[in-house]
Amino acid sequence: MTRLIFLGPPGAGKGTQAEVLANHWNIPHISTGDILRQAMKERSPLGVKAQSYVDRGELVPDQLVQELVEERLAKPDTAPGWILDGFPRNVSQASFLDELLQKRVPDGVSVINLEVPDEVLISRLLGRGRKDDTEEVIRRRLEVYREQTAPLIDFYRERQQLKSVNGNQPLEKVTAEAQKLVDSVRDDLMI
Ligand code: AMP
Image 1: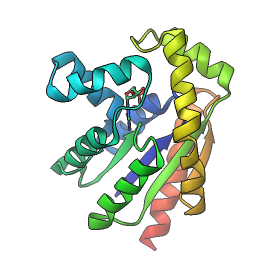
Image 2: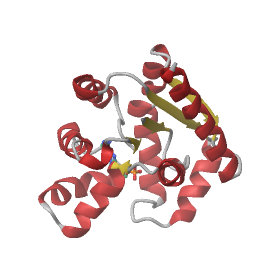
Image 3: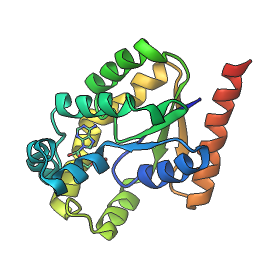
Image 4: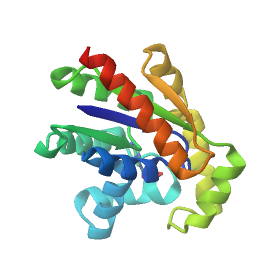
């Protein structure tokens, strides 16, 4: 069973890596950003509630995101594992996830922190052309990352779940390193 959380600032390549590795392991790639964008496109109640936060680069309220993650992780396709991309985004979401997993699968969650220098992040994000990738919103998303998400690095490091990968290298190299780290955790657990 493979359970992986991708941590890292916006533009670090979490989505790209999560997609490739989810295909490789044949497990779902769960991106809260993708789910929220889909909900906004459909103008579902979740989408309508989330829209103004996403447009400003702010975090959507914890309760909304936590509910969607709880629902998604309850689907049967997650039985062989999952990759989370964009969740948790702050300490309270991480605690929520902890409790949720305690009920089912307490051990063996790997956390990979993708490290990328700021100037690379900004040029990647500006080149991406997503609606929330304007310069002002990007700046806010990076601030929100530093204030609220970066503390999760220590949170997971203290629990010895954190592995770091240099995200400023060719895509295939990042994938290979992440894959190796997660496979080694899984092999340890099987002993
Ligand atoms: P992402 O695609 O992960 O960059 O997310 C895009 C936007 O969706 C973020 O800037 C937030 O507004 C919102 N979002 C995604 N995941 C979360 C989360 N875990 N908690 C709160 N807001 C989120």
